[in-house]
Length: 356
Image (cartoon, rainbow, N blue to C red; front, side, top):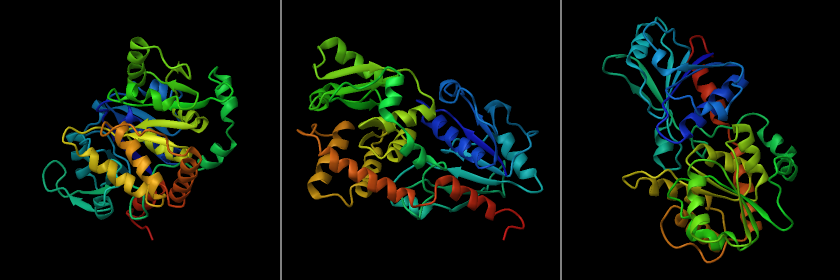
């Protein structure tokens, strides 16, 4: 099929990151994709070589004269350009119109996934939009997971990959990646980080801004080494996560990729001005920690809350081996479900004329 995928970059890089991964996964499965984006600057380091089967298009170029594809995906409620909607409505065979929502573990996701939303106003009156919700259960749209991802991770040599970039760990050091927002309470966590000798790998942007005051105001603990690293392509960011013993992640894209990495992670959720992110965080933790022992569950719950700015940092880290085993079980459970791209393909194919 031919796909039009629309993305507005609100802030940070998560919207572009998720949309590029989806576009790349669709193209890798033989689909033709046009990614309409209002700010493609992050793709210069995220996907510098582009990808076969994907055309990156300027958002402003979508007009009534633009021939639409078989499927039009509106990512994260970005609101399609009115001329493009008008062209969809005027077509003899309108496309399947998908509203791809943000990821959440909240209960409403299962109730809302796959629902039809009739368009009652112009432009586009008479069209149907379908809500597609990523999620963590079989009653949702699943998570983006390209074919062969687990096999690639298992074949990956983390120490060798790090050493080739000059980021190799010293004897006895654990390797930690830091991807966070500016509000991350890193200064309060330095003591926790150096319970074991630690090499902290810090990409540009907010993570390096968060680390800089810690460097400037007080000498870093002797058991902590900090290395600033450059922006990584999406493929190399995955390899970075696979190579670390612990990953701090944020938002949606890195959050999902940390779960495929099958190593301990701590998530900083995107903060919302009305506090709605707390319900989202607790909904995820409720699912993620459901089968952990009570003590480990309480410790990890407190850890995630503290990193998101609520409550004191726990006095001690959870048992790393137990945490690792839990992350592996959790990831294996998610991998037993169909991926978001597989489900999206099946849903859209079922709506094509003549489909069985």
